[in-house]
Image (cartoon, rainbow, N blue to C red; front, side, top):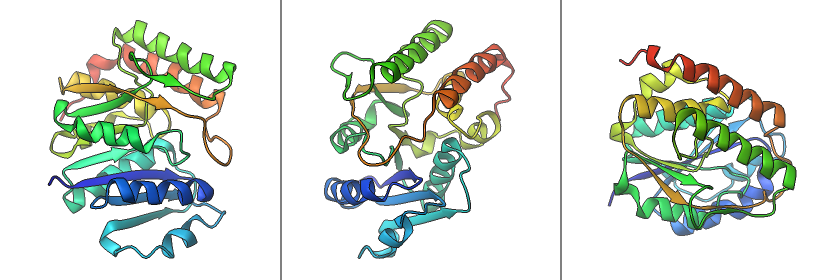
Length: 238
């Protein structure tokens, strides 16, 4: 069976991890779960350290401060490459991404080099979000869809990467390290003509805690993406 690494970036997601981790372990018993933690102060690392999991099945990457969600994804992906995983699944640790949808992406792993969990396909939906935040999310998708002429959910963090096809050095060279990473990594995949597929998923309201995503971060990501898109032809592909 193909090997899988699951990357979970965290900042103070203890209560959500208590719920999410056993569900992931039940659904993906053979997967390596990597938690990339940006200096949580809520006991996240202690909780993980107390789990009775074999060391090779749970990898904790502890970072000294908040270094950006894109940086966390890249570091998790890099570690997965180093240990020889065949696939990398990335998802949020706040329970907005359902484990059942992670299973869906896994079942479709042969459909492309990158499988994206989309909120904008038939059968997908957003549940429990405020009207304002839903509007911002939909507006961001509308702008990127129009500008780049694509229906890909460019800001989705629920993704399954085929490791052998990850253009890691190009991602490092061309992608910002925060929220903009999600948009820009899709552009790199498109630039390289790598196969991107999508699955319709449900985005739920976060569990415990407060969202780390602000309106400022979201719109900064979209605005920087548009600037980035204007120079897409100048990306240096190694």
